[in-house]
Length: 406
Image: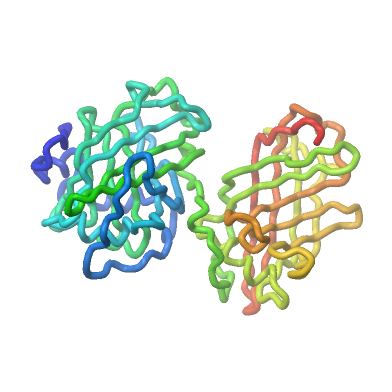
């Protein structure tokens, strides 16, 4: 069944059917598709009363503070995209109890969404244009609590999930854009996509438009971490369970100076954002968490052929904090040849807030590395907390292009 929400009176059970929900459908619909593991942010729990809307228009819409974006489902009949976050000017999270109620006191009167091939303005919708949705309707506490949903004539969906109202624990709202049909010739398992959306809320004649976006999401479901979840947070007391593979949101070679310096940066964090949380207690004097060792390697793109000078990974001893007066927000190690391994926490280093930057810098390397070729970069960082617990963080970025000398 396909739904049209042009009329707010669309039956709620029909809405549930359009999502494939029956008596056992709720777990698949919400729980399985929440982007990435763990919690998503720490907004306040629902409290009594509704926030007041702040009048604006589409040109002055408030921007989502993105915590995470992902493609949790890529199937022949479903392309599901989710963004997690909230707004600084008006908390969509706090408005959930007013919107997703049996008798709403705040309404979502419409919205739009579009999906693009990553880094382009090429829309993958069937028309090549953004999708338009009517009202997003709450499904009701007895059908699907904590949800407001709209659908267009093709069965594409624009939806909001409030995790604490939906029984998923605390977390920021999830905005879901789900395509039932799209240009399948454009999107393959190897593709990456960008999403944009907007919503218009109305309360007592006042309208507020909100908009969100996330970029670079692959079809494998790996989360793209946004800056909103990366504010400086209290240091963890233990590293138990904190390590893992870094979700790289960016990678580059910002310096290529033959005979002098090859600098490779990978930006990102583990899904739990543990590496970001460690910054305040590692880049400190005294620190309660230390990076006791690490390693770096660089390979010919798509191979396991190392192109360091020795053809092997380079090992480093402790990554040390240079001191607040010398270089805040950084830990760094050097070897006898002057190669460096480093972590930079932008918010601590006086830079705009963002994910940690992991840097591997060589003074000498194999002559195979030349402008226009692609390399794969790998780094590991071994951390130890005061309680003796340890964690290893592994970062890898493939297909990084070597730039012209700079």
